[in-house]
Amino acid sequence: MYISRLAVDHYRSWESLVLDLEPGVNILLGPNGLGKTNLVEAVELLSTGSSHRVSSSAPLVQRGQNKATVRANAQSEGQTTTYEVTVPLRGANRGRINGGSSLYMRDLVGQIPSVTFSPEDQRLVTGDPGGRRSFINQSASQLDPSYYQLKQNVSHIAQQRGALLKQLSRAQERADSGSQANNEAALSTLEVWTGEFIRLGMELTARRMRLIEQLQDPLQTIYRQLAGSDQEVALTYQPSFEEVVQSGVSQESAALISQHFQRIYPGELARGQNLIGPQRDDIAFILNSMDAKDYASNGEEWTLALALRLAEYQLLTQANGVQPILVLDDVFAQLDPDRRSQILNFAQSQDQVLITVAAASDVPELDSAHLVDLARLAQVHRERLEEIHL
Image (cartoon, rainbow, N blue to C red; front, side):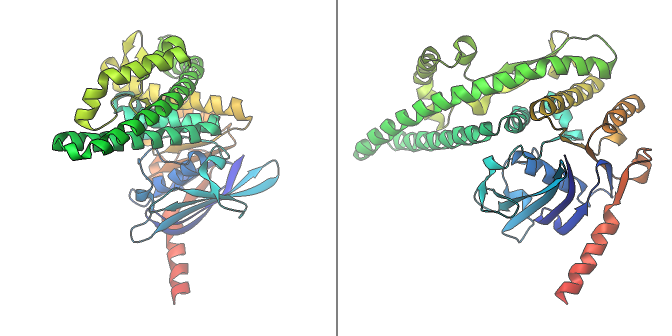
């Protein structure tokens, strides 16, 4: 599979742009600040329904506009399929296939599989847990589209439960006896939301556990190939619902998690927020039996992040029977010659690769690559828009 045309309207810095792409390696050349990363981020949005760069959709919409649109023509087995995502300033993203009826994002996620490696990926090893959860969610959604809706449901329940905790917390601060009936109703509703949070949260935890297990072997193999060593590498899943690790998705686990919620209720009430749940999960990179976050060198962090992305790539290829689109976003200037050569050798055997570079000196020497001068292309589109507005 490959994308033959990518079009964006009012997406981040781009008012409008149509980008024609080729199978094989495509190099997007343009100075920093032009919006190269925004374009490959649009591919990520089509693949996963979200961006690893932001936690909400609002930043994806060009300033002053109420929505953004991303469209792509995907070629597979001689057929062209058009996928479209509309990103509203507020509300849920929606999709279309071949201009058909409006769809939920769960119906689009995974249709155009892709894997992105960027300089930000080093933070997967050393950064905040939110980035690692984003990796888990995007990878799992492409491997199993039903995961996307499950995650959305768990997030919705967490928000509802958190809102009730805030309500009860404020009522306690006021010590308003006249609101006793309202408090009892809120407590009853909280019990219902907690039950659903436990039920769906256990399933989400189990799905994440399976993903981490699937990544273990390819991560170890690829890391050793990249590093040229026999170091031991592993991923350790650190779920908030630890009971699922011990007893699986079961009534026993549900009862233990329920007891946990009862123990921490005073703390949740005092803070007005959920203190446990999948929104607090994390993963750790273990290198030679030590936490890489604390002990890995800068080079080892880079290699771990790259190995993780390539392991994800391998899983998606095996699961879908289709090579994902590989995005290498502004990484060549920061890779040493050996890793750069390894990546280029890998890239040349893939169905489609999108490489962004800021300077001509960073353009890899590939005779068969399709070079796109984004600065020139953007100027042509601006002139066309001006003619239309005239």
